Image (tube, rainbow, N blue to C red; front, top):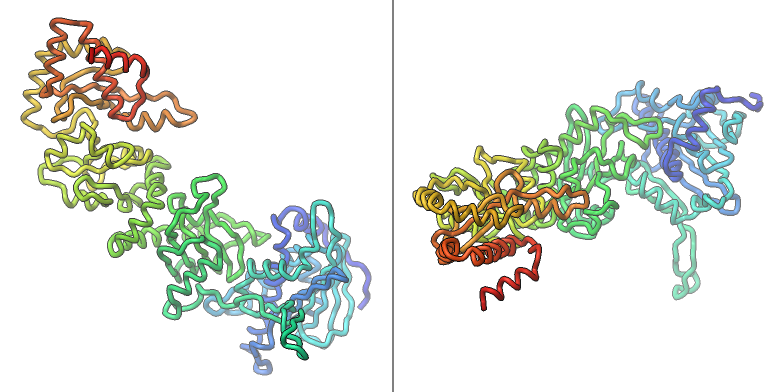
Length: 627
């Protein structure tokens, strides 16, 4: 065989240029690709042994070895796989995107849980991202002759006979010189190589060996230590998700959580999923106990680690989780995914969507089980991530509300703790039409709100909303179990109380007073009227329409707020002494009526936690009353 220079096909040249400069986003990917190809080569000899009685497959004889030579600036990847003939070298490495692994896959019946994802003719060329020269020494199981393949990139390659003693393949990369922008020496560093192997190839099912520097006692003096090279297996090989659940303990799952740096906390719950259906996959998911410090920042990235047959494809696959479950950590491994040319970026395919849908349902079911069986754990989770669930209800115009409504919790006025909407509805009185709620900055503040008096007096439970997202989420939810939500500050409480008829009569009799007070507060309130809800307090503010007072407060704090205002109603308690003073002032002293009206309005603003427009005028009005 001659060693003349052979040219790549024109299409292959363009593709090689893309491989080096465009397709891969991280240069360290090259080692993942070469290790995956080496694993594929061992797979081939394994499957050959299944059908050829002349061959035996001894697990200990098959491995991958990584060797770094800093002096020569070379990195070597050796395997004890099936090797290649001259024709296979030409076919697999002479035409980029020709996949020997995929062709082989079609020829054999794969065992359950086995897959070959490597595309030797594609991933192999990622080596040129870091190497000026790539040399392949190989000997096929089918041939007594070994061969050497060598290339400096797009200019072409040579193939020539080479006396190689053992079956298998050795790839030698002559690394590029360092530049101002790139440090190629990192791929000769022992610690960095171990880091890359652990990151991408930890679960390759054959040993990945390396000579590692260790400190050991000297043979002649055990009190002194020296650095020696020791061959070690770097990868774990058997991933935790492929083990039976019965073999694993909570400590095993917690150790995996810590090893993968999913969080600094201890996971609250884990899910170990094995699915053999339209799409096959394994997954280990974690519900954290504590909220990550950057969870609500732009830096936080949601997503699960995505593996294809044990090889890390993506560190954060966002498509696997809906936003409202973005707190979930963990990984998914599937052999059924459609991968693009770089084995790095996923195609938006049917399999991925099926996995994502299944994972969403599994998470929801697990959270529902926590509510039912481990309420304290769920409350711990909810205090950390409940806001995200409520945002999920509100987001996308309520498209996800049916998935999330049973997971919501709010503080109860009667139970004095967090309760679900199902809890609330199960305790509703026979004559109760609505699910009542009140909004405020804290439980204590809400409990003192004048608007809660009548509903509480009826013995109805009130849900306390203390987060800015609460009311927006409930507005999107609209109903639960056909029960409508009703704010205690809404215009009509729907109580149909007998006293309401008396209030309506008295309101008509004093309409002139309320019209005059409305004129005094023109532009600040929509109307002034007698209250049907107040028992002991003299005054309160309510809202007429969809925008509530609490929503106004939230919207006013947003950078792009449109100055949305609630239509405020000032309600006066007809059974309070203040009302008599108002009537007398209306009949005898219009100036005093204006003073009383402004004081009552500002008092109502303070109760709601709204700012007083003119604090100086307010204090002066108080002084006038005192004098």
